[in-house]
Image (cartoon, rainbow over all chains, first blue to last red; front, top):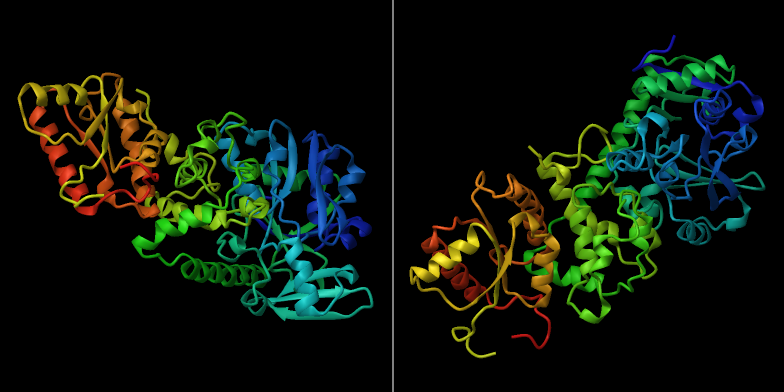
Length: 384
Length: 143
């Protein structure tokens, strides 16, 4: 049977599910099987609204799981907090999985109860900017789009009338569109921290587009696959060497791109320019607290240190709220970009946070969200 | 603001009750000269010093902040100062990244008998801060 470390190619046995899924419907089928057989109490999935909007739902209805969306590039939501205090199986981008693991380190999520199906992710796109991009760069009415795909570094949109248009991601990003800024320098594309790392990279030949490549990362992933095979929901076969090589190659190219962008974005600013830059950027803050609420790592709750000592009347030269948050997350920021997304005054919070986090994490040689047994350095105080 | 030489920096020194506060006391009893630039805040243990306190000091107008406590291994509360050290590492990194001069933040272990060491420490820091001038985070209207 299936062993930990196995690399498989599989697809859903149900034709309807296989067709609707982005690549073979394996993830949907695995989640449905886990729910059906009582491995979990509920499943977190995205419910499709339109091409640019989907809402996360927690459901215990197998039909609803099967009806969930395929992959959506323009819905950059982080699912981690939906797993808090529940026995769930959930799909997730690498950053969702990172966040779940960080929450488990903070005793909010019990990893034994949570099954994580990771999805390969080359990056997500902000919905509003995407619509604007479709009008300006693609000359397509956003309402006419029926499908999207990323292939060979190009972003492809299919319209109702059967046309396709492809523009290279590099070109889009130079024009200020394309993936979210933090995705451009993200360096985890295959979620090796999940239980089951799935995606369409490495699916070749006849199966291309109708099967999923998945790697069994641990015992929980093995249970997921075995359960789904037993339930008759999926069929799997070992991946060929060529498929594995292609997947590695795609991953290598994407990670390399991320590294180059990171170097470009985080070139060290001269000492004397840094403080004015941070002060000016954070001066726009209207204290809505959205970044704290949206942060999938933060787990303090309502009475947190960052908000507790924050008083507008103080008229400080820099926001105490942000100073405390920058420090508290300096070892644990996973760079998911949720804070920048929700910020109503468009402060590039993720970029600012990462300029503190990257040096700290490099120095400590700590990668947040990768290994559940590794405690955050900030917690590492021995009590003898 | 007058000439830089007349300007006396404001330095906030967090001292732990058992060691460095005693050190400050000893410095006084031993009549070691030190500038009147420090404002000492006594805490029961250096482990009590939250990075938040340090930020608050800076935002309220401190030109430098000193975090002091017992020597490692001598903590009155077993390992409070090890916690301080850990927190300080993050704080130091962050102050550096923010673009504040690293001379504005110091960590030092001073025992109750080391009065001279305390006085010398204050002398050194004051001289350095006088050189680099007032803190850019000082609110308007605070000298």
